[in-house]
Length: 463
Image 1: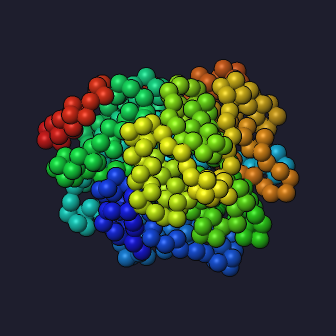
Image 2: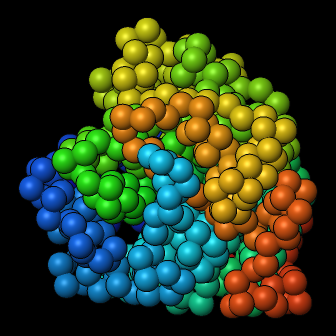
Image 3: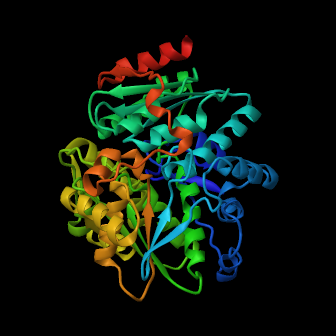
């Protein structure tokens, strides 16, 4: 299994090398050269399996020779051993034909744990075998950072630096990043919004002298291994509802497009997915693009669903790569237009291709709060603001012919103020995190300046 860049001019890599590299050297994102497929019988055989066994069967073809079967299976088992639910990703019925996929039973109470816990194990195994050490730098709008720190804290082969937008994450999200005491983790509060964090991260990857000096690696959803791990719960949930003998649809609250792109990969692998619905908050660039064909950035407006406060959705580049017939030059041109002009127009043919796979909807702040209240009263489910956005769009767009699965991306206790405002209930953290507000914080405030950030990282590594 080989991996190619969405911009067409970076070296072709193995799974392991693509994972450790993160962003391709031409600025693109790695994707599989070909998508392995599963037959109806292969999918049917997933019925009754544990989440770990399903994960092994779904992901194994993408890994190639990078890990042996035994090693890969052991790493999967270690990755999910700390989850708080035996099913790992249980389904809850909200209404006839509408189901909630609970993805918040991991160590940091968000869907990012499914990928990050596994990628932490894969990194440690690969780096130990190679006798190497890397510097991981990540950008987060809230959940990726805490999941990365939880996965990599205390590991011998890794230093972790997480950039998050100062004052634009929830207190729980911030404390999950700033309270770990392990010396190899560093939380950096950047002056700016998430897109600034993401832009500085990409700048570091494109500054090759710095990249090579610190052995830079990335675990944002730009990393293919992150997307791959998220493919699994599409299979596990769809099979629970009768796949492959029954089609299912998914609604995904998303800002950076990684989680729903994993659903697209599941569909390409042969999972009978009818519709993939993008659910956005008021920072609705994905909904606007799918509606009009224009991908034009706008001001990021802070919201009660901060993990979706994004205007540059990195993983959308992977979808564009397929929509443009895997033409790396075409994608590179679009990304240049985005960088230099703030946007681009998707060609008619590519837009038609995107619309064959993706629908979309937008939810206002008022509608988000109303949905939290409604779900609590009539569905018996307390939702985080992001999950509520998904439920609202799903309720608006689902039909009686096909079951709809909405992804619940985070535990409501990660956003207690918004949930309490909507429902009158202040959700409690799980017992294992009950002392979170008593723990000492370690955080560095930093300017939105590439040189200063690179100096900070080099100084911390050297100390």
